[in-house]
Length: 280
Image: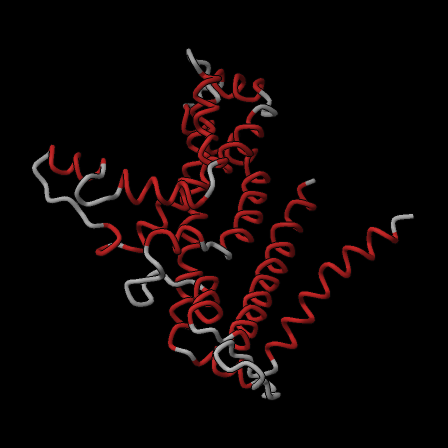
């Protein structure tokens, strides 16, 4: 009875994939309509040897690892902090997870024009208040600015999952540890952190898949520059397809990105998924 839905899903996935594979094997440039000879793996060769590919691959890896580290560290600390009772905890929880529901383009514009602007931004005002020279983040530290913007969006996701996991922590274990003389750091290291290892693994697995395709933040703020400083694989494919009109090479790049994403997903599922199964 589920075969019709499976068939629709299969067609929905295979048709775009088949068209992408076809376009990657021909010289398909929108500036030369009708000139579409078969070139085999030539598009793959030119994409992999393009000077932007190495920079894009490195920036993608650097962005993913940086945001994951920030999300896990701050997610754990914030989740442990808001797990304690204090006045207004419900409001604080809502405010903590609210950035996750803001569209990437909107959050990028907020950071670009209201926070990180070197003249009228909040950070610039703070710098001037302390007598320091404001920093032009998108010119001097472009990748750092992108990491801040993306982390601001994804830390709430980690907080949401880890905060939920904290609700299932057995308080009797913590009370028993306090009676035995354990301090806050010992309780966190030996009880809280091991309890959060499974949700942390879920956070890493889910965020990695989405962070490989970060685009809106880069397009809205730096445009991949200066040079290739903030160009990741997703933005590199965009430049090939819509700026250089080379659909063939962009299709090859898209398939390369799909292969990289599947390799990352396979590794994560094998390592993290097996770890979760063993613990369960």
